[in-house]
Length: 215
Image 1 (tube, rainbow, N blue to C red):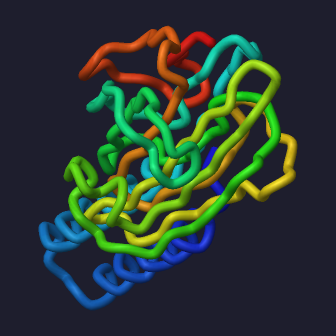
Image 2: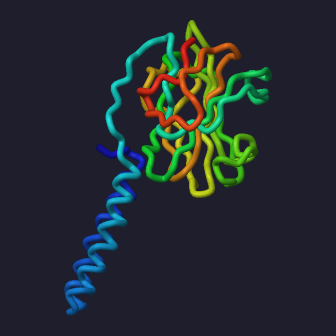
Image 3: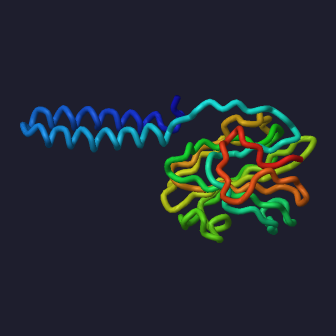
C-alpha cells in the first residue's frame, strides 16, 4: 500500500524504468550493459516505492496515551520553552526520520485540531538545534479532555515538501494520517511538564503504534 502523496512520482518512476530498459534493449546489444542498466533502474524504482509505502497500523485508541506520530529514532527528550503556542515550558520529544523510514505523519491523540500553521524556512539538517525554529515546518495542536499537545513537522536538508492535512476545528482520530514529509526530516512533540514518558533516547518507534507518553 502506497501513500497518495507518492502516486505521481511512482507513476513517473515506473514509466522511466520501463522506457529506459526498453530503449537499452533496443539500442544496446551488449548484454552485460543491459543487465547493469536494468539493475540500476530497478534499485531506483525500489527506493521510490519503499519511501512512499504506507503500511496499515493497528493503533490502540486510548485517550490516556500519546502515540508516536512518525517512524524513526528518538533523538531528544528534554524540557524546553515552547514559544509559538503554549508560551511556557513543555517536555519535548523529537523523532528523527531517515530516508528509509515511513514518512507518514499520524495524529498522536484523539481530539480537535485547535491550531494549524505552516512556516516557510531554511533546510538545515534535521538534527540541527535551530531546525525546530528556522526550518520549513508545520505546527499542529490537538486537544482532548485529557491533554493538549503540539507536534511540529520539520523539513531537513533533503526534505523539500511538507504536507499537512490538519485543519483547525477538525475532529481527528489517534493514529490517522495527519500529513507527509518528503525525504529525511523530524517531528517534535510537546507535552505538559510532568507527563510520564514511555520512551528513551535512541529508541526506535513506530508511528501510530508506539506509545511515547501516558497522560
